[in-house]
Length: 568
Image (cartoon, rainbow, N blue to C red; front, side, top):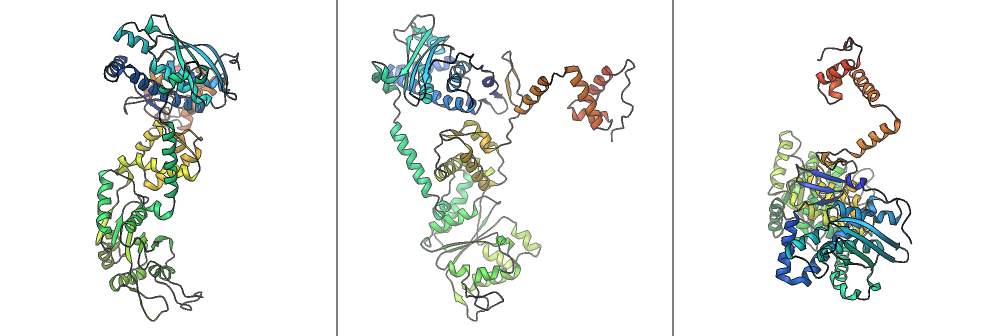
């Protein structure tokens, strides 16, 4: 298929995605985090590689690096221009290669048919950084040396075509030519193609097997007991809590788990049960806050038939069901006082008495309680029994909030991604750089539960085979404090998408700038009911600045609006 006759799309949309955040020390191109590096540093790396592992291995390493970049940019191109024809979307690659400083790229010819897999492309590179660096280090070369750039072109085209496209330099500036010229075809169409395949082999079969293994493992962890027993984290705060958990598991001590809502108290309780010698017994969880006060005693301790109106059958309580195992009482601080008294008796005597029963029943239960409220304050307020607090608080474990264990956010997110990708039958590349940066910067008021919800939503919204981007996780995410390139290539404050859309609507309206300013000033004064200080705050300017603009626009007398009120 011949390339489209229409003029290829400009790279303006790509330039707008380039953001500089001096405060965070990050440079972004869309969802990808970028790094500005001195070409002399890259040249030094090239020299050291050639001197240590030789030209063949160096070529393979640099080709693989470029190939990986090309694959990522191909995925980025599909997401950036989803409504364009494939040939137009393909132009993103050469444009990105120029924007990233690789070379000035000119398309000489292109024939591509994604349905049949046909591909033949020729491109010219001017000012290739790689050819320039090699000549500076070693002088004129005998063979083409733009290995990183060739790897990029091959990776980018291969991702689009679904087959390995091999690009070769038919002339190279490092060999004395005025410019580099590259040609790409399916590797099978090159007579010596198989000799070049080694530069692109990356144990992909092993990668696929490993990915499938991770999906199988993730599927097995969706079983309730296994899932809840999985604790992920290496931060010091998490490790302190986990160490206390392991020490308690070998004993029969009652454990009190404390922490904010959503930190994973039930997961800790299940892990404690799994690590203990009661792992073969039942694990029974009760949310005390979710049970009506009039039913909580029947739920916990059981009921005999006819004990009260509506008790049509004898029913064992949660304590009896947990016999030989572990009973987890979540939100124990919300338990009503009468139930607290009976719970204390069970803990002291090791027996329960069903409602309406005459004889108690022995139970062998390990109790794990959890709360997100201050029980000492509840005792002072008369909402919780002090003697029960002493009984429960034998072995407290404080579970840290997620914002206190930021080192665990990335591994937790990756673990959840694997689980939900398997659960929803999706294969994804992972989190984009920008998405992971947003996860690390979030303050997590909902803790691990909030992270679970965000990751599952991201898995659902992400395109199959793509990455989870920041908008999949945070729909209202807005980048602040960043700069972008203006039309002259200088850094300037980066407008948001909504600001650009507003400016576009104003331009399309045909409204003159003077008219727009006058209407905007008048509207601000009107909303502030004539108070210039209030109007200035609406316009994000000082009162003298606003007064000057209004005076300039009024009659020659220059009087300010007479309706101005005194500032409160």
